[in-house]
Length: 315
Image (cartoon, rainbow, N blue to C red):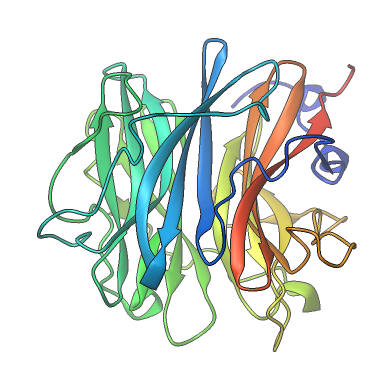
């Protein structure tokens, strides 16, 4: 992360995302089902999406879809869906969702950190591995790699995202408890993505100190820029149920510089729109000449998934 300041992604770009003109929501299930917790990875000319389908009674399964990198909103669903279901006996025997895929440069294999849960909390983070077929995954182990063991994560140590920097995997996850949700940090070596060590400073981020995210922060997504790690997250005000998206950047996971435009992405102003009641899960990825934000939007009780787009600087 040593490139010049001129290469850094400016705050203004993160505040410039606009919903794609056609295709939203890109993942939709008929209510009361949800299509949410979606993440993307670009492999060659293809965008691979892994997302969660929430069925009746909060039962989640993992789904796989693809799109051309030239138009990430033109989605084709894998006929093998669902590609992962809850285990027969384990920490994820009721729910598997929030899958974050990545290519590990140490062994050239694909991995997925994901949320697993039994019938009752806590939510915890597990790990899958595969060899490039996004419809075929194997659990690395039957136990969580980020277990809920501390007070700030008594109800959940989950909703993971990650970024590789050298030989280190940086993981951001949500700590849930009786109090407001918080954002936590952990690391793992690329030689063993299951060997996760939690940051002794956790929770590393509890909000910007402003009113708009004073009621809790959650479902943070990490994106590595030339000089900073960028973290996009959901925040809400005290006594509010409306989640909006904020952005901070950090070099050390200790000090955080907030985007002066926060919140950078908010629910649709048009009542009745599919994402008019809340926004979460703001993952960034690059495709073609643009940055895309893959996010979850709420209308009423249901969450679906859509895309927003921002042009690269200098385009």
